[in-house]
Image 1 (cartoon, rainbow, N blue to C red):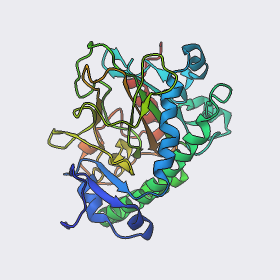
Image 2 (tube, rainbow, N blue to C red):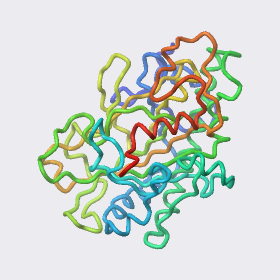
Image 3 (cartoon, rainbow, N blue to C red):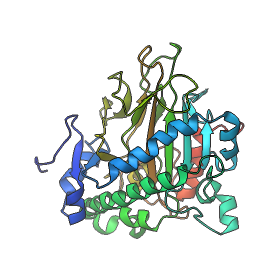
Length: 363
């Protein structure tokens, strides 16, 4: 494998957007990042317009979260397992503990109406329900959300094309015809984006474990794009932050990934870049050539956490619900033992089983 693979100062594989657009063969970098010994995550730099799109959206996470609860509750959508619209305190942080420190706004970043088949929407509302927008109370959210979300999908397709080159070279005809990652993303009507807001922790009441802001998990989709987080400073109850995009006051806080050897490694995404991490569906259909990424978010320690909150944006690129997740012939069965997956599942089955593990159906 080539030793010329570029890395960030934290040792994360680094791709140039210009190289992706030019179609350069970056298979060595894909293997370094996503293969057996990689961390399942890489960073793409030099994306035109990204800084402005990020600045337009992430402060809206703060502003929406600051709205009165009765306003936010108009946009909660329990029928979809909270995978459209606003949610807070519905997701399991760890077994027996619901996440009170994080709120999120989910929607499809490409299609306001992903599907018109009423029967399909009823069967899979977590993926096919129409988008839920707070247009009456917060109309600025939709255009900023969709603009950054679509941009992240566009770059994700380029990264996926590089993954396909690497996987095809290794598997050839053993790869299922419908399992090519770029095609999966381009054809999908179910990509999902999530504007995340992590509330300030103003009392020293929570141990600052690795998973204190977001529990350890792997994404169940194919490829996840992550926007660099933005931190805010504001007094409790403020409608606007006093300062935005401030330096992180606690160097231990932020995103962590767990490597194949069990090491917990902090990942810093440069502000002019996007990170892309592999999900469980890609691990299944490639027989482990692309490996999913366990990750968590550590909260700021008190008193550095006082009046400091965090926003970020993730886009989950995933198959349509009727795609069967078929591993290549002859692979180690252990590579299929991820998350809630059981052999024979479609992606829709897998998604429904995954949501059942992480969301409270009675909240």
